[in-house]
Length: 317
Image 1 (tube, rainbow, N blue to C red):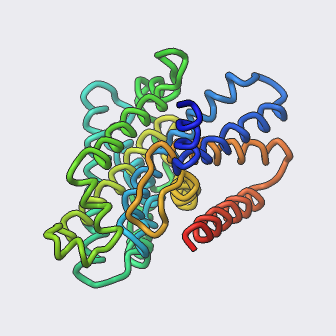
Image 2 (cartoon, rainbow, N blue to C red):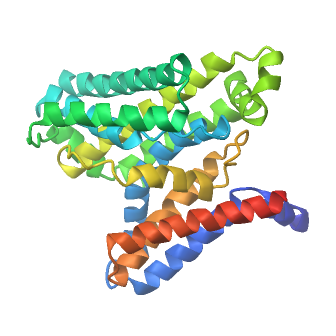
């Protein structure tokens, strides 16, 4: 029984991602000079939560199949955070709800625009989302005007706090959303339709799957998740910055690939997103411990993604 369970775990696409995350945790812990494992775990859960939120949306898009990648995530984060914080203007109460709704609405609008460019103008998804990201970033710059508006005190306290079992509030939010995604992808018709499109869009269309409508929904969800991540990140960091989403373009793809989701589409992996997010944060922390700069960190991320893609391609071959 135990042997069978172990063999089953080995075959799970998220298993080795979690093994790598654990190894990275132990390696980083051994290099840390203070705070111990608990402090490192809290930091990993806190900062990893933002990667989880953006990674979940990116995972949905990538599951649609080759060529589907949302490159507008960083600009969407910036735009949603800038406009929602400007709306709240530091006020609490009902303005917090208004700011959150505004951020999510901006994300939904971005998703609609992205898919409209892809569908109506027949532009490849990578080109469409990259081009649109310049528009979103320009709008954020125009509305920001160099100001850094602080979030409401209650939101800042929530995003930096740990209310339950010592686990960061952000991690609980990301976990709750992850569970919704897992149910959506594994226990609903929508998840089956997304997987069917990723495996063979022509066959899915012939089988009666509403390919356009389902694809549109994935791009909208991806943008909404990016907007939510931007909203929470701005509240956590004390305000929206114009470069706040820059690292999440590569990170959202990295956590998806490292977590075991198929880059060829048709297969998503929610547990693996968490493993990938924690692994990437811990790797960055370990590189920081050695005093290495941002360039080395980006290079390492690229090498990791290439290596995992190469291994995955080798297994299929």
